[in-house]
Amino acid sequence: MSDASARALDRQVSGDHYRRMAIQPVEYIQRNGLGFVEGSVVKYVSRWRVKNGVEDLEKAIHLLQLLVEFERAKDA
Image 1 (cartoon, rainbow, N blue to C red):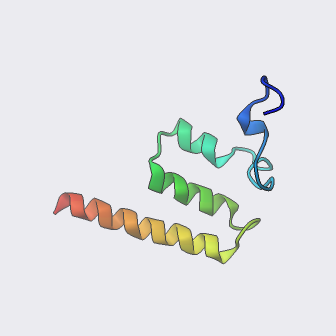
Image 2: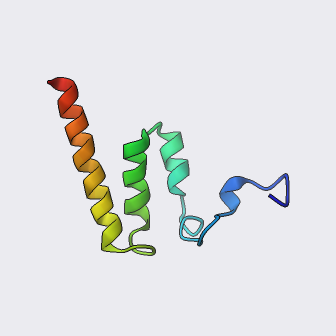
């Protein structure tokens, strides 16, 4: 970082699709204590229109399918 006082949320390494959002996915994920899989779903669903289109929705669906399987395995 060039400015030690700059917040990491004020910059994005690649693109600006997160910084343009009213609430960045990482803020929502952290403040709500979401785990990796849930957080990744939030990320993909938040950015699909401005980044990878339907591919991001497919990634979110896949992650949700994994989460369902993980949760069902816990109950078994």
